[in-house]
Length: 268
Image (cartoon, rainbow, N blue to C red):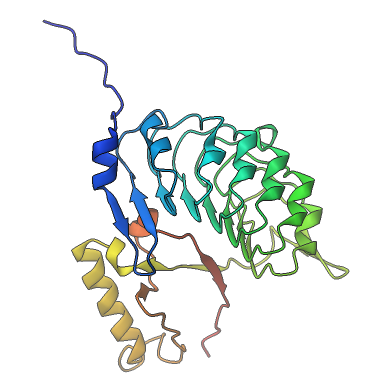
């Protein structure tokens, strides 16, 4: 029997990449190359450095090129679910970035350059599901940061600079080996605290038909109170235009990562 050839990564051409560029509702040029089996960062993309948003998530990329900073127009860079172990120094040249998703990679703390502190326009940074235990100290300069994801890592302590991020409103450090969470003179044992409910906001366009139908049904049911005697009857529902509240496998497709904590409600 003839031997099977080893599977090769998808080779992207400039012609194909140009055809995949779409304009977002707010007039940005977005290129989505998610889940295409890409193993090496496509060199042809350097002829498209005027992109505003680049999605290379759910591929097999192990390394970013040293000149990644040439994409000076980028506002959003999504690299979640790849095989990255380190970031090049030039990532600090992407000073226009407002959203950076690096979750679910193989990043270690030694692989994070100090130039991450130069991304002062960042509003959302997701570093969850990696192998990090510390962060570069100069990331304290990220004054615009509103959401920071550090979940599923190896942190034993909250990075000190985080408390100095004056605009930070959402921080997720779940499933780290923290002994306690310090706050305003109080120590709360993480192991003994009650589990919190996560809410993942997913855009409707990311859901398959079955999930969309199911979520719509649940949303309407909760909004109406769920019928006589339903446990959700007293729960106040907050709605978001174009977003669905119930968790779904489609969270891996979300364009922009966001997560928030929902307080537990006691049913009397």
